[in-house]
Length: 441
Image (cartoon, one colour):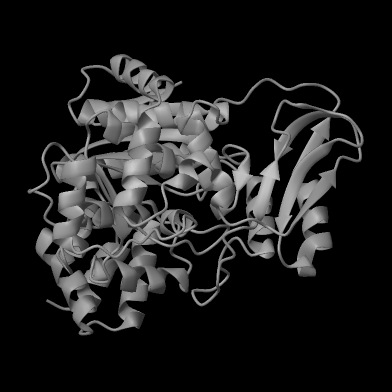
């Protein structure tokens, strides 16, 4: 078998066999296939695509390139959740305690963020003493006891995907549906989940800017899950404005706490209830999504989810007093208001620009070596549809370093589009994708 022949075969739009895909990924992982040949192959995939079976085989080949986590000693059906990313995406911090309280074990491996704000791990480390360095037995024991644990990703999880992604990043082949889908799903499968719920974002602040592309990606990932015998559901949700009000690590932790108390932003709460409902159905704790939704609403109103959050934080070395007193989280030295210069209704908030603004304040990493300031970020006071008068505070900057403040103020102000008439509300959930097909709202 020669790599040049396989490049030619895919360039001509032909279907590769399982053995040929395994040959490519194994050879590239070992260094036997050079970058320039893999670059040619990924460009051929970019233009010719892959069948469902090819994409599933690519996923499994990347899974088998490294360590696979065995969660069989954890009682119950392990349901993982993955978001394709966005701005103010605090769902894991809410979903983990919420779903765990309902009896579905959440054994989650998360990463650190490179971009607008930190990842889930960075956010949790806003809590004094919280640590993610658990060995495998500690991880399993905690999930069996608390029903929830979040740890950092092992370095040897899907090494082929890490190597392939780095190559795609510099060869303009990142935005290929089969390559994106296999990259995401390989990590979820290697992490040991029995079932997977995917939150596929669409809009200005998402990787996929159009609903058409978002549904295409969602279907590709659900197809992989089905072919690899993992029950998988995808929810296509809005990211045309930031989710919730908070963008920043400690700010998002505080917002998650408020949401679990029933006092959070309505869009964040609603999305978590929808995602969580599907997790409960896949975890066989409810027969229907409607039944699951009611269970989760009752859990929020009962205060039980907050108690689970405290138990989870304490189990991983964090200070549980933070839950009752969020002022113990890292605090910014200065709060600076962004003032509206016109009146009307908010038509749009360019989510990506808000995210970049938060990163400029220090809430995210520009490079892997960058240090995050856990206290800083942006709190939005106005969302799409809200009335704005001239002189209103539309957002507040949480600042420690004044270096970029004036530029950030201008950027946040420019991110808001304000018009004279109130627009029809954009849906939060665009549809659901399951093995049975696509259901659009």
